[in-house]
Image (cartoon, rainbow, N blue to C red; front, side, top):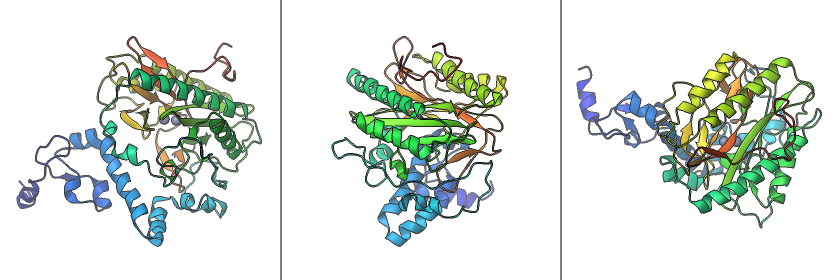
Length: 403
Ligand SMILES: [Zn+2]
Ligand SMILES: [Zn+2]
């Protein structure tokens, strides 16, 4: 075999997944100059299968560089990561536009200063330093937790608060309102319920919810831009209460929206409904993507691949990882007592995404619109309970739902 001496020199390393002799290094680990033995794989298959848990290694190393180094080094590391605006509390967004190939008409606007959470509210571990330390080090990144009845009861309470907060935000939507004002509604409603807005300072995210307008797929940062008649806007809310998180989102119309956008939003809503309808013990996680892909492509739309549903509970994001696209490699089957989100992002044009220089905002590569809906779900003995389900009081904004 070619390069025999190199291969045998490395054959003492074993695959991080299966333990067989291994010689493939994760390219990202190499780029980050992580120790060669920290992650080596025997095959592309083992590398791919390990990806969702392995990638936390990259994040941990980036975050530890940010915290361990001097302030100057921190800023240069942050610049590389596109996090400067976070460290400067949004100030980077007040200056002139960075050089970037903007994929659509939307541009970034200034971000307001960080909102305060009262001292008496119970907070997750990233509140102060931006790093979800427990989450990054938890075994629950690899094992899907079966919740106890007591945990499930807390999840119900928290998810109901999240729903009420999202509903309050939805009522605030109208042309002329800024997404920062929507963030204020989310923040105030969350702390009024005695909860913490989970996105706030999570991996340095600067605001209390995500607002994703038009071609923004997800993780849009609430800013000073005013919503315009004809826009679509997704609001993604997560709250932390009694030690657990509840996560949901919906995409709304701003004023009068064109027919194509209405169809996109309705189709995305249906994709989530159809995915939820198959959830019960014994169903493979990879089936979720098949159902969503079938419905989206039938309507001429595409499914975003880079962002997935996730386990949730005492951790904001944990196993399982649930892709929304077809022929995905998600492992495992659903079991009663698991809680996770399904949150399909459906795009009018291509499925490919790009990241803005702010390090958060994910947009479609072709600048066409994208919609999303999300629920937090509990697998029950017989099927599924939608923990973030709409309430009789939820604003009646979707024409396809009977009042
Ligand atoms: Zn969410
Ligand atoms: Zn989520």
